[in-house]
Image 1: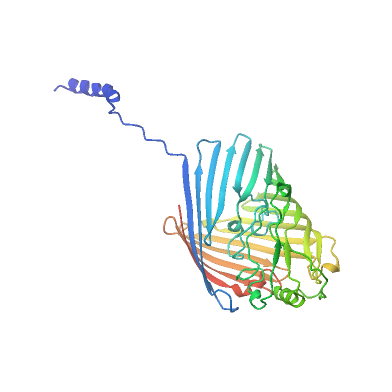
Image 2: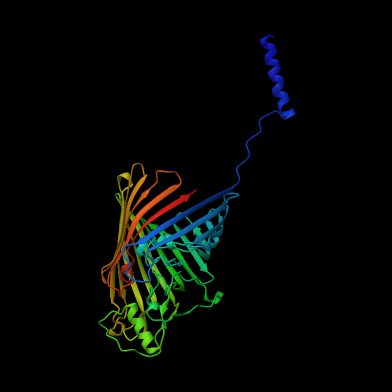
Length: 432
């Protein structure tokens, strides 16, 4: 057959193919849906059995699953569930509408304010899961809650407004748990009990706030206002004054002894407060500088006689971070809090409290090995928390973490009370 005949036949096929359905169909468009999930199993071993009722070993399982639906650049729908220690809890569940200068997000979400990470006084919008103490970074302890979150965005300033319709407290235990507020002290005092006053779930008690952000030269600044109930409880005053030594700091065990002797048990409530804040962030060469400042209108303090006093509190935080070669990272912050209108009736509460936090990490072998350290130090009451760890990521989508949690300080301090909970752990996670 002549070449001209071949050309004619192929041309005829090219004409008939679309008609006869022979043409290759375009691949179907991918569905605008993205599923992500993470399963983490953590094994904990206590270094020493300091309490006959404490757990010498414990296994915890966390699973987070999240489905994102993005039909167009404007609409985003997120549906997620969170399984924590066998309990199913709503995770991120929200509708996000993104326009040119307005972003609206309605539903379960986490709102982060403040620049000082672990010790920021402004990062208090969402409650935290404290059922395992400080064994996880603050960001991982945050619990998504229903919030209406609207942002107005411009090149000069940005304004964010939030509305929290219903109060939700942080997750924690009062007794009968290694990380409980009173530990296992209830075992030595069978008559000891704790009551809690839960706020009414009404819109009249809703929380609200705003954040105004602007750039002044090379410095990013933000002004914050929040009117809400604290998601951590305060102890109510006892019905009668109990003689106490203002120079001695009481321990949870002392409170249990007083309660069982007098028959008056501790009760807790959630107080409302106003918070005014300022945050800033800038860079000087390869070093980032950041800071937070807050004014709390009325914070609760319990005196030596177990009565309640409320005072304003001013807190300032200043920190820096540095990113170096091989993803070497260091972050350090120092905090100072001052009780206003302080008098001797507030003893044994310290008039001022200073603390520090540090975070170091260094990646090796193209990021397959990561060495990290997190530390929190209260310079006033001499309590501390250390968490050195190593992460291995040689297998895609699989992470292995090994580390230790070290607590220390006087038993009257928040961190020092868990001094007997020093532990090693191994965590295995799978994610996609």
